[in-house]
Image (cartoon, rainbow, N blue to C red; front, side, top):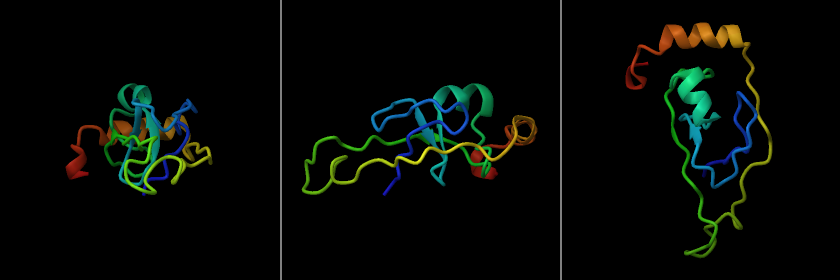
Length: 102
């Protein structure tokens, strides 16, 4: 089950559970679409993976025990462990490689 992290790790923008602009990599690193498109260029600065839209967990349980009420989103805010200069260089060296070949 996804953690549903509450913020963009780069700009700290709030990304509530129903945010359609939330993006995740396969390790659940979470960023907003603006940072993914304009700063990271679809390169996760933590793992070099690509991003996909984060699924939206149902608010209402249409099956017993399966909803935001039953599995609430994460509350721990995350931030990058890398300096912007390092991220910029990492993205520049990686963005030309398709995610499936990284």
